[in-house]
Amino acid sequence: MDRKLDSKGKVCVTGAFGFLASWLIKRLLLSDYHVTGTVRDPGNEKRLAHLWRLEGAKERLRLVMADLMEEGSFDDAIFGCHGVFHSATLVLKPSSDPKARCIIHTQTEILEPPVEGTLNVLRSCKKNPSLRSVVLTSSSAAVRVRPDGDFTSNVPLGDSSGVVNNTLPLSLLRILPWYRLFANCSIWYPMSKILAEKAGWDFCKENAIDMVTVLPSFVIGPCLPPELCSTASDVLGLLKGETEKFKWNGRMGYVHIDDVALCHILVYEHESAHGRCICSSTVMDNTELGSLLSTRYPSLPIPTRFEQLGRPRYYELNTSKLGRGFKFKSIQEMFDDCIASLVEQGHLPAF
Image 1 (tube, helix red, strand yellow):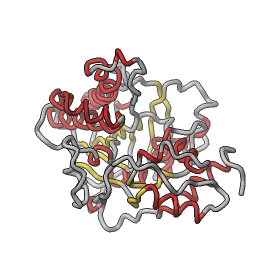
Image 2: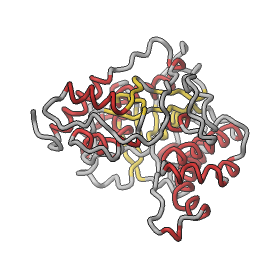
Image 3: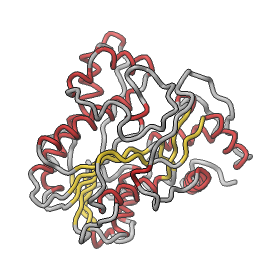
Image 4: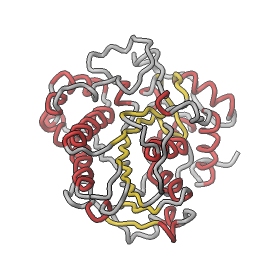
């Protein structure tokens, strides 16, 4: 990655309210970009106050309404932008009604919205003659989960891992073996990310759109929005002594929210960036993480033992596509910043 775009220009960030998108907008504004962010209700000033407080927001931020499930909804936000950062996502849990848990219902309820949302954004991108590149946020879950259930390899997982890069049409990725795998593991998030990314790659290839995907691992750090996202809520639970959510993580990669934002900008600004870029600092077992955190924050009831669920025993994540010059923050920095933010927002008592 050695050739930068000539000018900053104007970019669009979808799902501007969110955990990652807020940080991405913060970094883009600090880098002198003009940013159009999409939100559900741009008139809700109280809910969006964290965005308007950002440095440069009054001069170079515009918030507009858009709906992922409405085709053409992103046309206005994207038109005239040189770049689009698609970080918004729709991830729904399966129905609690056992009678409704069939493949067709699950596909309609859980898997179609993220795919259609991605395609609706890309359809608007196709209409924009000013577009240079799209950066789509996926997840390292899209390379960690394997349809054959084989997690024994010690080869670092990279951009070619998983099923997104193969030649199977999207429809064939929704067949019974995949449904059974995810239903048994109750991990619908990876499935939605895999299918949405696959749909994005297929659309961009058919329509000659330049796209790069960023695959962050478990994102840790300060939360700018007033409402905690699901990952921040899981971390808060861990810091309060809960094990239910983190027992499912097993071995997991972790990365600072600021590094994820910077990574998105890095791959956008360098025209030599291509394909899928994994963004992760440290991979650890949940017991190792618990021990580290309980030692660092002894006043918090952080668990050090978790129920073993037979998840992958060992893997690493290959981040070499970002280049040697990209320096990730440490696991200690991630949680220091995260905990300071939780204390400041009143979710944890001062200590």
